[in-house]
Image (tube, rainbow over all chains, first blue to last red; front, side):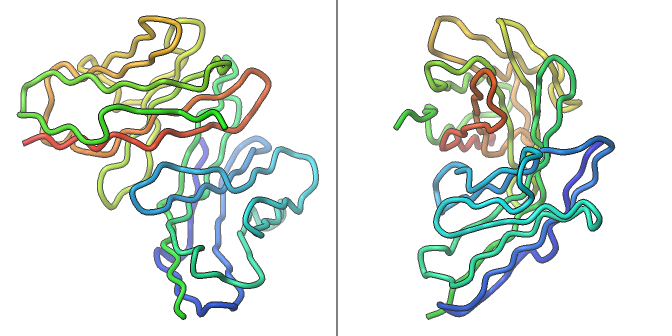
Amino acid sequence: AQSVTQLGSHVSVSEGALVLLRCNYSSSVPPYLFWYVQYPNQGLQLLLKYTSAATLVKGINGFEAEFKKSETSFHLTKPSAHMSDAAEYFCAVSRNSGGSNYKLTFGKGTLLTVNP
Amino acid sequence: EPEVTQTPSHQVTQMGQEVILRCVPISNHLYFYWYRQILGQKVEFLVSFYNNEISEKSEIFDDQFSVERPDGSNFTLKIRSTKLEDSAMYFCASRPMGGLEQYFGPGTRLTVT
């Protein structure tokens, strides 16, 4: 079975400050990992993905995440927060569960607030 | 840029009624999914669909639920007799052959009264 834990349901930062959203996963086999963002009243948009290539993954809007197998972590960072980054962020894990299924298991999400 | 679309954006129904939620996946994608998110809770997997059949379903996806791809473009989720606890945001997603990332629609908010 696979699971995802996102530490902190709500993170608040000042504009221009570092963004760090934490994600830890549990998986019995090497996982594929994803970060999705959800803006108010919109669907889930893929930010970035780790699929067993480079451990440091760059995504859209200046976000990046580092896969650390020893820590079973995939934390999301951005050096300088912008007001438009305010949204809910979801970490998700996937693996082949048979028949090339690759269903996603999500964390509970972290709401990011950016203060001016 | 191609995107997944879902209709309606909001559906209100009475307990015991049937509802059909509709999705149009990205046109060259071959794997289709439904997820739901009850208010304040995690996004949960419901079902995956490939080659005109269910490839996996969760414990939530009981006999009250069904999925169908009635034509080459639509992918539907039917709830036969809605319960209050079915109130949630339902997301459709699709994935291309050879790709690992899923592309999500904007969701349908289902309210059962």
